[in-house]
Image 1: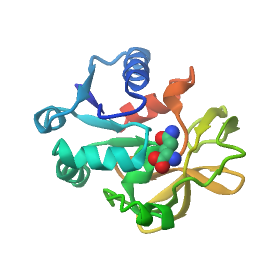
Image 2: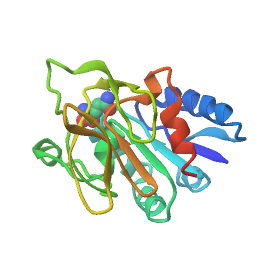
Image 3: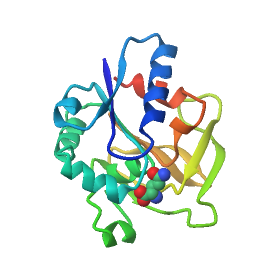
Amino acid sequence: MKIGIIALQGAVPEHVSMTLQALNNLGLKGEAVTVRQPAELAAASALILPGGESTTISKLLKRFELYEPLIKAAENGVPIMGTCAGCILMAKEGDGEVEKTKTELLKIMDMKVNRNAFGRQRESFETPLTIKGLVEPFPGIFIRGPLIEEVYGRCAALAYYQEKIVMARQDNLIALSFHPELSADTRIHEMFLQMI
Ligand code: GLN
């Protein structure tokens, strides 16, 4: 089993290391591989779209010819987890800033995101989050993260911060406003691997 981490920009090594730890904890055989080419994407049984800058990652996905294959993979039931900028890109709709920057979203999840919802004051912070499916709270690390303003259709909320959605799932797809790869807690990566 190969878990592909889209490696165009952002928190790539952290996701690789977290995925390896999660595989180990679950007693699963598998590898965490970086993905920069369509053939590498096609060989992965699950994919992670890391945080970074959504405008840049969107352009790079097009340039590296990974944009269409990612949409196809989502349609074909491949589990995909997007964190922070990855969450923004998975959404069907963005806010004014997404439009202004002409960021092309993948539009694979029935949700609307607010790209820089936390503004300057609270750009980065950590807070315990109650997550559906996990018994103990999860340390949510937010770094200029988005908020999920609305979910509809097949998409459902899994976690809230101050009554706003910060994690959502739609069948094989999962999106998070925060950065589980920067914590020392492997439970979200384990939850994701169990979707395969
Ligand atoms: N706010 C950033 C964006 O618009 C995302 C920040 C992050 O991924 N840490 O892409």
